[in-house]
Image (tube, rainbow over all chains, first blue to last red; front, side, top):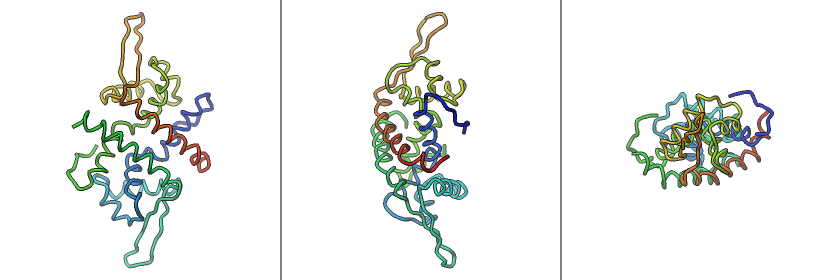
Amino acid sequence: MPTKKITKNTERCALQEILGVIGGKWSMSIIYALSHRTMRFSEIERMIPGINTRMLVKELKNMENNGIVTREVFATVPPTVEYTLTAKGKKLNPIIDELYKWGEEYVDKSMS
Amino acid sequence: MPTKKITKNTERCALQEILGVIGGKWSMSIIYALSHRTMRFSEIERMIPGINTRMLVKELKNMENNGIVTREVFATVPPTVEYTLTAKGKKLNPIIDELYKWGEEYVDKSMS
């Protein structure tokens, strides 16, 4: 991430910051997976084809640090870890839905 | 990009494809820059702090291949190259606006 510059282009800077928070390869898929309910780590992992455990740990950690998900550990054997979208994270759902609709209209036609 | 899997999770797969098209570090900033008018390469470059020429060339090429921008070369000396959002690209504008609003509400408070 480049050092934040003070320029007239503050809107574009803000967009870069936003993308730093949610522009990771997997974060939108994780938000999408969590949009209906709280999930265990293993459930999220199964929902997202192509992600591996290490990447999912990393993305969830980043999202937790940015206040998009909360993480709760239950003292079961083995321990259960559950993730829930915060209010801040939930507000991204309609945006991701729109993005998905855009993709339905366009991406399948231009890719194969 | 992982090999496309045939799974029940087609929605998440589609989201991965969409992010392949517009999830690049700079593509949303470029769409944002082009949202009001056609621009020359050098104008786009000035609009986006932190991007370098090589990255901008790469992103614009990718966006052109995905039908998000069109590229027009004028036989001036030196040659002028202009980029314009396609209809497909323009449809992303309201989504990026929403994302930006989300960021205004949340990102500044939790970062820096």
